[in-house]
Image (cartoon, rainbow, N blue to C red; front, side, top):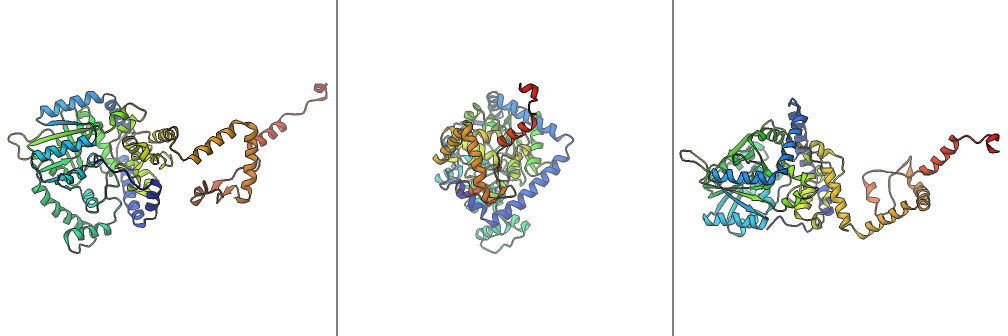
Length: 482
């Protein structure tokens, strides 16, 4: 089962998030830290703009030759002793993974952080097969204990305060634990260490897959990725097909951009490079390595104007910069991917009929494009999705009629001039110093609950322009009038 379609409309989810004071507090603390650290980390680079341009060029070149890179990756992984499985959609991906685990009679699986497994709803499939899956990333474990999904690409539990985490841990260990963060992490370490040692298999995501050598790169801060890829007998890695990069030479630029943009670190605590299963004489590593390459709608995106969304390296910087995300958090988006990239990817992957409201969850301020390490033009794609929604006639009937009426009125000069004059007259009782603090029409009145609206001019521009033209042209002389 893939990520479920939310039953509650986006507008209701957003209003609920806005009313959650603890959520507002948690988002403000966490994202402010991310933004400041990112700026500091990028300022240390001698040519941050040049590096971002190189990163974009790498992603652009990779996506343009994606089929060749993937074929090379498959050959390299197999040459290293690994196995490659291709999954057309989430159903096939879950079937492959569950099948591999059942063949090996696995009953306990540890999972390193993976948005791809969230996308395919893998935990639900494992539960249905009576396989226990334990998230080992601290943030992922917290949301698993809470029965929730991640609310941020990089920081899954960014919406939780330390008090809320303490409540979850108290239920888990059966005793008071307090809110001291080092003490809380010690509890998590003790609980999860036992799972690592007892696990039959591990499942991880993939940050980058290097085509020329078949190397899978895992980027973590807690060591869970390294434990997952070295202790259990079987390691199953799941990646969206866009995660491939051509060569080792491409990794330093993208890795530098990822870590600095995501958490503001010069480098993360652990960068784990997995090149095949354990070889004779090696002390650790899995006996088997399986790579599941997931399509799930990505090749469809390759063929349209949204292919640039596949350049994303999943750093979450666009969410940290987005004024909408900073107010509503990730769960309001309703899908796996939140923030501006989620407002583009989720409708593309899961359907505009379910997520057509997400492209409107943006002020189009451009902060997401400025923050993106590979300069993805998210505002352009958000606008394109809005236009697509209009073409598909998904907006309400009243909205379509209103815009048709507006188009008709502005196409007829007499009607337009009359409307401009009437607008100024009707707005006059509500205007103060050129602004309207409250719009009287219910359809548009919500605009003025948070901001003022510029009042229409009492005398329209075309009327003033005609008067200016008359004043600028001198009257004809007596000789000219003869």
